[in-house]
Amino acid sequence: MASTVPKVVSVEVVAAQPTDTDRMMIGQLAAEAKRPMSETAFIVKVRLEKIPPATGHGWALYVGDTRIPKYWEYAGGIYFKVLDDEFLAAHQGERLRFSENGADFVDTGVRLPGPGTRRDRRAPAIRDMPLQSEVLADSAPARPARTRAVRKRARPARAKAKKGARKRKPGRSR
Image (cartoon, rainbow, N blue to C red):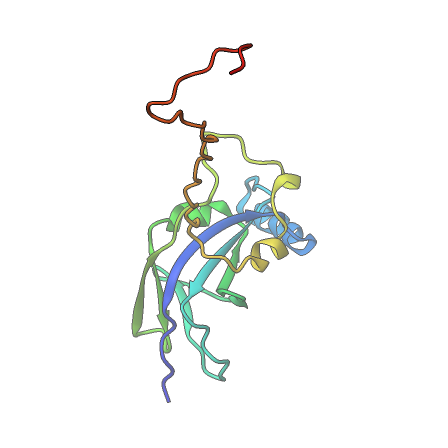
């Protein structure tokens, strides 16, 4: 029995502090690629309209033609981790797709954004990045919420003089 394809609402990439395991994997990837890599774990959060029930047969997630080998559930949907920012740069703008069999694909309607940091600015220090648990605990929508317009406080009203009433001069009594 085929399950319904998950409905993707949004996707966002958040730079986070790497775990100790992530640091070891970044070291191995850097040695294999023979180039330095930043010590950043990018969390790709795929917000779903409704999280599908767990079954023995699930949907494989693809970015373009690249299969994401592992993804996990969080409160708002699913996520996967990217340890090489060049993967994000190479696949930026590619469609996220699901497949049950590796041959037939269902387009989610969203594309992979690039890393959240801009290259013309200095990358934030690792200690300034959020922990992965903080990134995944956030169940708010990916897009920023609108702020309410703040009403200006009204100035206290001054007592108005009655029409036709005479103004008194100070110091004189009647």
